[in-house]
Length: 93
Image (cartoon, rainbow, N blue to C red; front, side, top):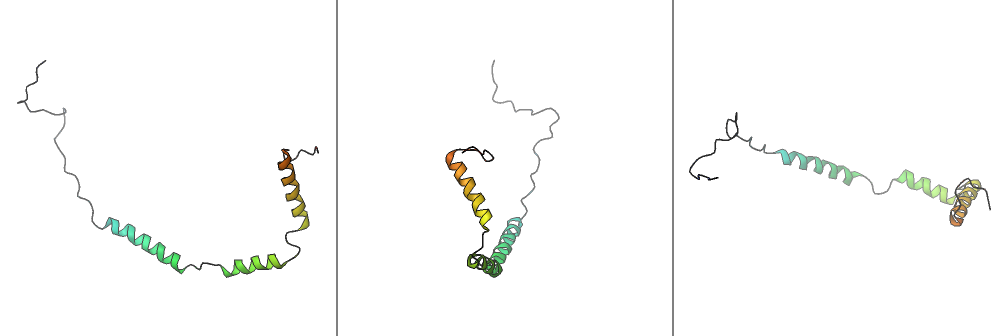
């Protein structure tokens, strides 16, 4: 087979040739940055500590009955079972 370098390619059948590519829209990146700036501004206005949640936590720490003793026993039981390799619900010692 011989290749003739002087022959121009005909292209794909039905092809109309190269098509114009739409120019990129300017300002699109700017809109994305504006959204990021708005988010950063909202985060800057958010307090680092929520006073209501802090007060709630301080009240629980000060309360001698928190957490309830039943909850403490249940958590201790689960921890002991897991340390011994037993599955939850398995009552064998």
